[in-house]
Length: 488
Ligand SMILES: [Zn+2]
Image 1 (tube, protein in one colour):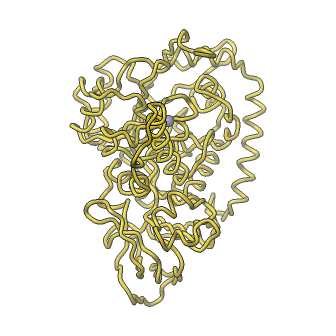
Image 2 (cartoon, helix red, strand yellow):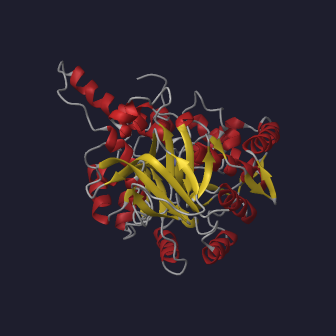
Image 3 (cartoon, helix red, strand yellow):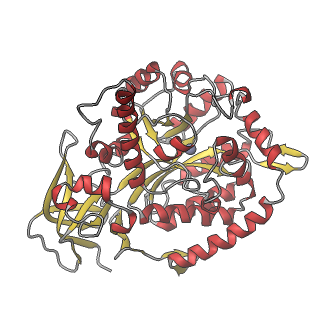
């Protein structure tokens, strides 16, 4: 098979030094995993030729916060808040405890393939499903199989050991977790170099010396390059600032990526910027789950922000939705302030380009990979998305403002081709087959495995005592139940 791809006569979106996007009608050559030439009239022997006339070529999207594993749980949270989301869904140690390692494989593969289908080429996977060493290796194997680029951020995940009587694994960081982290760190990267190991950590209730020792081990002997944690500052999650904890422990550094940050204090923003750390906002889940307004356009956080999907179990799995919701929600909130004051805004907050950058170049910065991904330039990795700018949704917009065409008009159906690390993973609007256990599987084959797995999990789920699970979730996460009201 040819190792080069020539994308001819497309509208190529290229960032300049100030993050402005220039749209240039030209050719682009991919050789191996890299973009090797951009310019008119390119040719190459023995190449895969893609005629991109009428198409927009965008950098692949970088999703900086996603729990990729839970595809089988999708659809059950349409009307849930966190209170119900936790026991019914992705609080890893509850319903997730029902997942066998095979269920994890299919769930993770489903999440990865949905990401690729929607133009996402890099994901930070907050992998809160490490119930056993086999679960972890199944998830890593699924990412490798899919062709996606990712940070598999290993999250120590205590498991429910008995539902009746209710018992959980007693240690947050048992010996096998320690040893597996060491083993995986020695083995990484996986998937031909695309899948790196990171750490996902939400155990800030642990004593300072335990947290510091873990971070020092991860950054030192294990050599991991990314540490990610959740942080939401609301009455539901409590007044504790994860930023302040990290800062006071001397652990807030540029390899830290914090998710959400809704309600973050001004000093949180200052400390994050001083440390050159970053944040990943997930507008759709944050809006539904009562986290408050997403902060990706907040003036003191926008510079360090990026975007993510969070849970494709409860919301869209594509970055187009996150860009659009993040931008329009921020505009809506600001406009509403004017209206409430009896005034009219003269200008609109932020631009389509700002939203586009959150999902591309700023996402790459947030994961320390700006030199490799997040924009289109010679020498960068070939992570590319080709949109059909003549589709019913994009026609004309693509000629006038291709960035706006993507951010405000496109949907997943308009994505024709997705290339990750120089390999075509979606072509002609259809996902490429993946190889599982030596056998090629089309998406429909994967879907059938997901449906079987879902059915099995659902049978066990029906037996669970959800009320106990709900109470346990509130206790474990330290939620103050007195703040939860039907009306204010
Ligand atoms: Zn999350």
